[in-house]
Length: 612
Ligand code: AGP
Image (cartoon, rainbow, N blue to C red):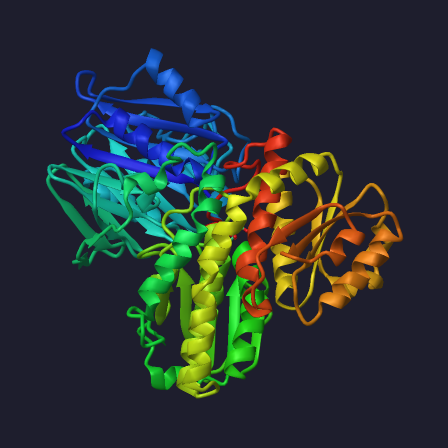
């Protein structure tokens, strides 16, 4: 929801904070700011504004911040509109403490009333500001970290914070509960950040703070403790990501770069997960014993957004290959419906960030009910990874575009491979069949590359349809969730109302919407149910609907039904989502660009939804 960054060391803090904020901007971009301690003035200084990091950069050119210790923030507003007063950092009454925060303080109004009654002056409408005034209240004859500790015990809700103080300028304090916070270890310098993408330029060794932990950073040292005070020892881990992976590298947008990375991502997954020649799948980090996995009698998938759509594909994949029932829930529904979960279930969470609050809560609910929990995740050391019994990393590299693309096909790929792994454990498939299916999936990166080579055709189709006021996406079987995903991609970056539907359901309502003003994207690759899709297309055509068909190379018949055909290479229907998703991602991207939308930072969205 928001991004925070902190620095203490020998360098000037401003450029480090600015670079970190630029890498965190995808987490929130309606306002931003930073604060540093200025030795000469023996005071804290703040620059903040409603707007983007580039606006802050312009402000800093005219009014730079000196100092070697500072904190920065990019905001996705929850309490209080994006304006100067509500932007972070926030200061205490005397301007001697500065704080940045990611999360939501649920009891802030009670605390604000109490603190106002004690004479504290509030300048913002935010929940965050109560934290810095609480710290001020307790910051009497104790070190800043003890004042922070006392203040945090008063809070209900979630937080990841960075704090600096004028009285102890050689300290940078961080703490977390429910929102992510990672420490970067440097030589005579240390860093705090919401996620590792902000540290890629500066530190390769990182320490992930766990919930209810605090860190006191100086230029030379890092002290971690529980919020209750007990010291914590934690080893640093090395970041595998390279800074270039989190840069556009000449692409106009991160989203287009990430769409085009998909063949490489799948190749990388296959080379890591399939023992060549032996046709054996393995997950070195899985950590759930095979015995426990093979005894699982049903799988419950929980996820949000795009990851939820991957989970819906997972139902078809896992039930087909492993012969056990699979349910799929939106995390925010799962956690509140008192789900029937037992120790014989596997709860499989899917999350690119590993920090989605609803999915985290769903996994906690499942663990409380005794289920084994496994997460398919892209971010090393994220909360979901730490709180699940096992993890399978997608290794898709940093996904910066807010609209998830390569993470989706990476999640699908892991679902296929995990299903084959489980089918081997449960002996629901002979090894020869597993080998054949591995062979088929290993051909997919080449097919994806073929589509990407012709992406200009999708661009032309997008240009011809960018003016439509609404879209309907239809698919069947394992491409029904892909229809949902195509609709999500389009609506979240072009703001055009779009909905995905199982094609068989069209006659049960949506057909009433069909007319010459609505574009209907029909996913109709070569498959057992191709003829059914053709009937749907005919029904749309007879009502003058405008059709864009996703069809297999060589399909001449479809041309009799619509001129707008986006061809994809022939592939086994079972694996087709790994291919059909790509033209839909490109269609959404080019429609949004044509409509002048901010593709990488769509309005109102954030990359990682770390609050409910
Ligand atoms: C997808 O394009 C969106 N950005 C959003 O729906 C996202 O998939 C959802 O918030 C889940 O995020 P996660 O995978 O990090 O848990």
